[in-house]
Length: 352
Image (cartoon, rainbow, N blue to C red; front, top):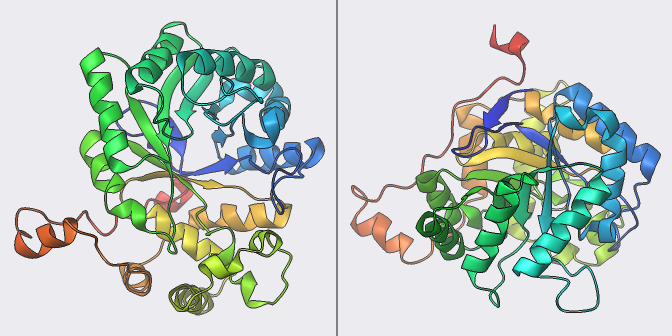
């Protein structure tokens, strides 16, 4: 599987990565419930396919996800990149959450124990914490790096100004910078492109993409009423089921049918992301083995420019102000980011 450097860092990660939010007890309907043996099977298969980045968070199943991932990796831990996150509440007291120095250090030590490792490759702020000075958060992260407990740091679910403030603060302090941002991005949710993407391209921040299938909606399975799927269990199908997203699924289905050879709407949706600028790795988070196999197959699909244009067009969203003004009145000085990047084959055999 092809690898890319994570932002401007020297860390190479696979273009697909395994997200483990489903490992451990269910925390929401339709999420979780993957016990040790199925989790180990997923990790084994991901490694076999060439995935080297495994993502979790302390908040996932209140630590169970980290524990199961550590156990499933076992002696192969040195072969992979382990990413986890800090922010979510890990206790009833308000001190056991957020991005204070106290909680970050406490949470890091707990994550290391659960993962059964001496270091975390990528430690991510799971959200922005408006109650804690960003200087405090970043100094705590930098201290963990200097102590050898963390190798790189990243952000998640930040706005454009929050990401840029964090990066500027790190520069001012002379400390470690975020090398990545974990963000929601898919054909159904393209807000990332407006503020976070330009910031990332300018500042050298890699994109780790969560919910690439819009919680399964883009697979087309919601066309079947009552399907055994996450959004149905959460009672939230209505959030995504609209005319625009139905048109996206129709286009994904049409392209998959035209390609044949086992192509599916889900594979096409992930392949679209792999050709978008600012995307380093797409997190897949399957609950079942068939879902995992379908996700893995996306790495071998190289969409044509024509297919990309069709998907870009059907999923287009309005450009917000002031970008809309800049791109109409000053387009020569403020061009939009590139629409796509060249296709990268997923294996050496395909490059020859």
